Amino acid sequence: MEVAESKSKKAGGRLCSTCNQRKAALKRPKTLEQICRECFYEVFEEEIHQVIVGNQLFKAGERIAIGASGGKDSTVLAFVLSELNRRHNYGLDLFLLSIDEGISGYRDDSLQTVKRNEIQYGLPLKIVSYKDLYGWTMDEIVKVIGLKNNCTFCGVFRRQALDRGASLLKVDKIATGHNADDIAETVLLNILRGDIARLSRCTLITTGEDGPIPRCKPFKYTYEKEIVIYPYVYVCILQEAGLLLD
Image 1 (cartoon, helix red, strand yellow):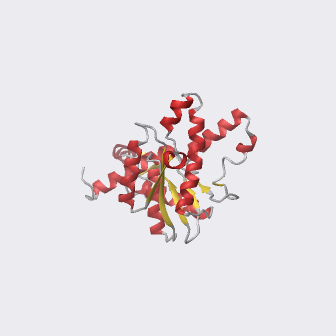
Image 2 (tube, one colour; image 1 turned 30 degrees about the horizontal axis):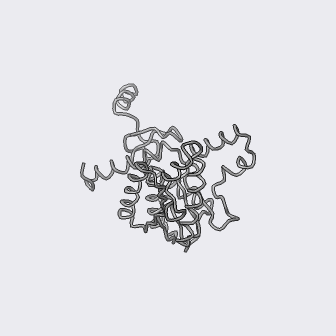
Image 3 (tube, helix red, strand yellow; image 1 turned 120 degrees about the horizontal axis):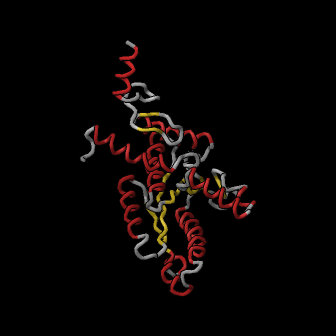
C-alpha cells in the first residue's frame, strides 16, 4: 500500500512545501523549496514586506521616488511597492523617476516601458534628461571625448541626475531595484579593487542617510532569478483565473 501511494505521489508530482495542497510548480532559487505558483507569489511579496518593516525603510507620509529604468528590477519594484503600500497602508506617496541619458537606441524602449508603468500602476512619472540638466546628451559627449571612459562620465552624471530629479520631486527617499546579486557583485568588485571604504558600506540597505536624499534597497535580500520569475507567475495566475487573455 505504501509503495503504491509513493508511486502515485511521484507520478503526480510533489506537493507545495508551503500549502501542501497544490502541485509544486517551481523550486525557489533562494531556498530550494518546492513551491506552487500561488504560494511563491505570496511569499515573494511577504518577504519584501518584512524587509521594509524590519529595516524601517519608510515612514508614513513620506514621498518616495522609485528609480525606474524600465528594466525588470525597477519595473517589479514599482509594482510590488505600489501593491504593498496599498495592502499594508504604508501611507507613502510613490513616484517614478527616470533618467534619459540621450543614448540613441538604448533608452528609447525603456522609457516607453516606464511610460506604460505610469499608466498601469497609477504612479506619477518624472523624466529627467542629461540635455536639460547638463546641456549635453550622452551621444554628444561621446562625440567629443570618444568611447574611452565614457561609462565613467555617464555613471557620475546619472547619479547626480537621480539626485536632482528627486530634489525636483521633493521626495524623502529614493528606492532602487538593486538586488542580492547586484550587491554580491559589488562586494567582489570592491574586494578586487581593494576599496575598503566602499566595501564597508556597499552592503548597507540604506545609504546616504547623512546626505539630502537617502537611497534604500527593498530588494537587498531578493535573488535576481526570483525577480524574473515573479512577473511570469503573476501572469500565469491571472490567466488561470480568467482575468487576462492569452
